[in-house]
Image 1 (cartoon, rainbow, N blue to C red):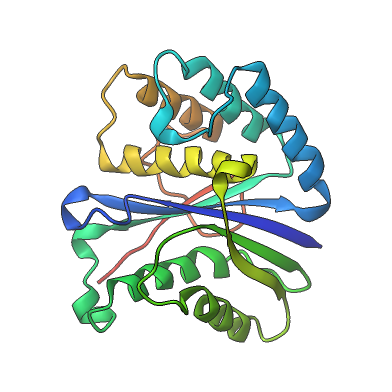
Image 2 (cartoon, one colour):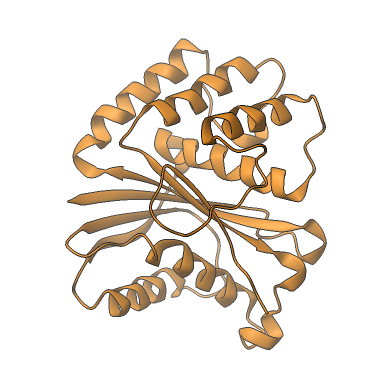
Length: 229
């Protein structure tokens, strides 16, 4: 089967003092993508979400609309979400990545993706555009993933997109941003963002959002905390 994977990141440029970074991915069967995209656009339109949908735009006035976007994700059985969280205080580029923070960041991207690339499937991996210091980061990420897969699964392409034009990428932004904010502990109790996080946690069946999954196995909403020694 072919899958489209939309990727996004949050808090990745903030440094050690910002708590956790999150790198998220939304997985959809490619043959269902047009149908699901149209349905999500209808949710946006019916809730007056006409500009780009993003975690940073969640507010009291828009809370109900964003709750319906989250509800759409959990109601659509074909969609899956996986996010890794990284404690920035333990992220030591000098020790583990030759002083190259950007290289370390894309190693985390590798860990996000490789666990869910299954034998016999093909994948189109779409990352939100990020200005990299090295022009080869996307090519290198694809190359190391391809070597790891040993031909058992295939990466059709790994490229960047403009999330402003892509509803499923915007959904990934909302979910990734919610995880990052919850793990960083900076959502004010009773705020719209806190209430949206509560809605996600209820859907997950967990007491709160800062709750890691037991394993990286494929599931509806997988949160995997990277443990660095």
